Image (tube, rainbow, N blue to C red):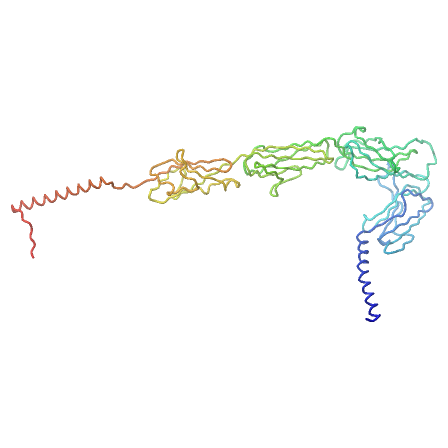
Length: 491
């Protein structure tokens, strides 16, 4: 192989190795776009605001804004937008990362503001920081720091806040206090609005090892009832300046929910029944999850079948077995308290319904049935009906007096050939013990046959008659010629 060919192979191998990697990097950047601001929270700018950062999104697709953060006592409904633009002072690109810088004059402004930068195509791609501009008219800023720790008690909740204070103190020291306080405007909340008047409460707080504030919300101290509450939390610093507010929706729930099951306590086999619940957790708009459990008479424990119905507060069941059904519901509220209620339903068995057919016309099932002992006949009860779960287990008994003369759906001349009339009871029973009876009048007849004595008597009578006829004939012959001659035949 020549050196030129070897060089070509080496280049191709290098491309094979590097192209997938380069593609992966671009794909990764496309899947995880980001925007950052290289500045800590709470920087103060007096003459010019100088900020910088990075982005995986081209600067032409970014927009920045500067918004005033109002205090809790401000009359403004929304924060005021001061500046917004898609223009940056400088943008450079290194390794597919865009480095941006922004420098704008702010010497005419005084505010606690939020600087934000975000994608114009996707507003979820954003970054922001709090800045203080100017030397007065600034307020402290509080920010909630989420924690995923569970509360030791549902009556006491502790939240951590970072407090960012302006660098410049007010020029007037009038009204100075010795401490900072946390307060809240609170009201009971339902749906999307307050259902009670808003009141101001003071909240206990302490400073932790990180310099942040742990704010305690104690249900007992505040003397508030179970329910959903809106807390608009804010700070008042030692210069009597009020911060922004942070809204928190809190649920206080110290009792398990009460559940009442409603529905029929008696039903027939195969009935479709609806059972509903009334749930009371002690306050409006409580979130309670229901779990239904069904125990059938045969001991099987199950949930709701696909062909049955379940809603947020009710179920529809097909009670396909007789016996005692146990319907139970487990109610768990949003803080984990739970209660369980059971409901007993007695399902009564439906007895079989007899359907009888005969080999002869049967207008009325109570008619007398007459068959001759010499003919073939049948009675057929195989089309008797019952519920779906019992139909295949039906048993048939044909009874005379206290004796079962035959077991089976059909009675024929092969099983019964007793001449005479009898009352036959047909008893059809299901697997649950229910029995339906039908009484049938059945007569089997027989044509009279001559007996031996009668035959002998008839033979004697015949001989006597023949003898009398012979005697009469002889007497007449003697009377005609006075002699008795046997007839002779000519040859």
